[in-house]
Length: 124
Image (tube, rainbow, N blue to C red):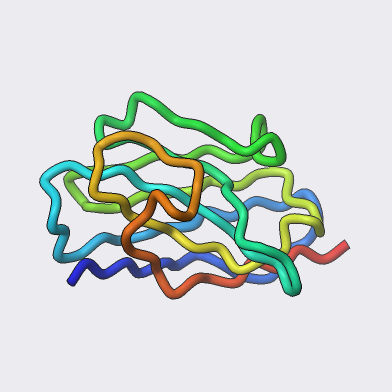
């Protein structure tokens, strides 16, 4: 069973930065794509960023472009989401997701496993 463990969330102020991490254990695929999604109270889970296995292709939601950066360290089985210039509208539970394909994915249905989520709260 693939396990994903996120960390790095917290309470910050507008304009601050956070780096989220997601460690992948017991991968069933030799190469896999990863994504970050978020869900605010009362809203649907939405795409934030995704990266392919090689780490050379990334895609971002419009809300994340220019502020967030997804990256990965395959040797550590870890994916990161660097978030800068945070705004109150970024407040949500952030989830990392794993898909048994080496390419990127922007839809929740493209992912096979999910982490438990980490809370990010941005105060104004």
